[in-house]
Amino acid sequence: MSEKLIEFKNVTYSYEDGESGSQLPPALNNINLAVYSGEFVAVLGHNGSGKSTLAKMCNAILYPTHGEVTVEGMNTSDEEKGDLIRRKVGMVFQNPDNQIVATIVEDDVAFGPENLGVEPSEIRRRVDESLKAVNMYDFRLKQPHNLSGGQKQRVAIAGVLAMRTDVIVLDEPTAMLDPVGRADVLSTVRKLNREYGITVIMVTHFMDEAVKADRVVVMNKGSIALDGTPREVFSNTAAVKSCGLDVPQSTEFCSRLGIKKTVLTAEEAVDEIINTYGDAAR
Amino acid sequence: MISDISIGQYYTGNSFLHKMDARMKFVLIFALLVFVFLCKSFFSLALMAAFTVFAVLISRIPLKMILKSIKPLVIIILFTALLNIFYTTGGRTYFEWHSIKLTEKGVNTAIFMAVRILVLVVISSLLTYTTTPTMLTDAIERLLSPLSVFHIKVHTLAMMMTLALRFIPTLIEETQRIMNAQKARGAELETGGLIARSKALVPVFVPLMVSSFRRAYELAFAMTCRCYTGGEGRTRMKQMKLKPRDYTAAAFAAALLAGVLVLNHFFKAVI
Image 1 (cartoon, rainbow over the protein chains, first blue to last red):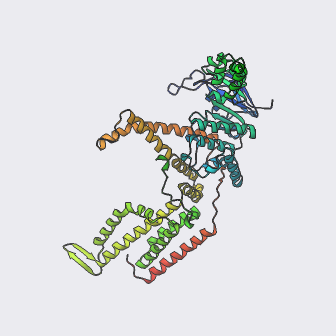
Image 2 (cartoon, chains in turn blue, red):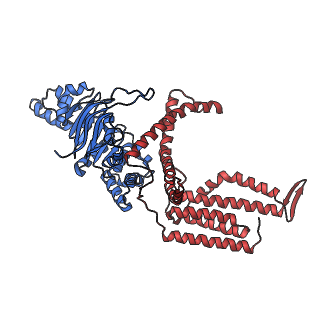
Image 3 (cartoon, chains in turn brown, orange):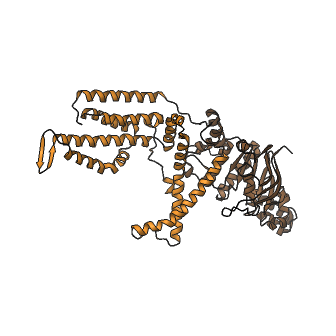
């Protein structure tokens, strides 16, 4: 496959206890992982599995206690490289309210490129393009607090897009959204990956979102438990459940019906059920 | 209800005043306030008052809005007028009773002061009615940017103002949510005397403070992720450029100053 963009080598990370200053048990334990250019990786895991910590390591917000993380060959522990790395790797957080800086949508999208010192006319072009890409162009003059959660999150994505980063890391971007907002954000992320070739790392705890990725990484107690295509990962129902997660509902449903093939989506489930039981029903 | 909150008192419009460069507007309005203080005779003050009416008319801001900005000051205006009537003496005496004296000069000064305050209030409210808080912050940042020579972090101050404006609606929403949560658990926020009520607000403000700190922390993270390193090396998408209308307005203000000075010279001073 194409070049390695982000690489974790024997990465261990421990948070410090705020009161005693002693180190807590590691949030990440000896992680080895490589993310390749153009991939769409979903990181799954239950609460406390270390998935958010993993995400924050990708753009030098956190750096490893042991081991190293490199982004396009740059070591994230090198403080001088922090800014360069963040130009390559953008990040979208869970709470849409706490990452919007400006009082007008288009000004917020312009914030990133303004920080990078881009020419004003070029910023204007990027802002318009990015807002169109996430389908929020008509809202460019609105105030963020009048938007829905899904719309705010798409503005946040446009903000990263306008910085022209190679990678976009999303830390549970849909956790605080309603189903419509979730679907909008997810289809936007997929579009960025497919049409613009942006590498996506998305942390989530929704199985049906992970199914849409090229690759699923399942975290458990600070280690990588499973890593593969969604079909490979979810075919191993027992392993997924031992990590405290569920397989997608359609997968579960079909396996209980005794269908051998691993089914990922509702559409596939319908097809498989007709294939298997269609004749009998007739 | 919460989504209706508009910060400041900006009145959406498309008039000459709305379209003016915020920096020029800020400077000219400040100059106009100074002109009002330069007025010495009724005639020069009348000129300023006439101009104020003219400015209100072209701004197309409804009279109701203007009155709203005057309303809280009515008491102050009346109080000043009253003080001036009895404390300034001179000229013809209209009325006398014990030590209270109503004189020509006193009445004149009282009227002059009242009109002056009115004009000042209306002129300055025009600035906030026709400029969004964001534009105002931007203008202030750019006007003060020469101060960075003295190591004053103008950009940081402006960024703090922008963020404060941005988070006002968010925090109002949050307050409402916490109040509802506390009410659901039996907190009585709307009954009792002043002391009981302020005590009841403690369980609202403590969580609000805690969550504000968390928000600030997350926001700082998000800003770092977007390569924010302060004002240095930053560019701006929206450039401010003076247009012919801004120079027209400046010329108008200069003419007004000349008018005030001439009228001051030829007519009797009130104060």
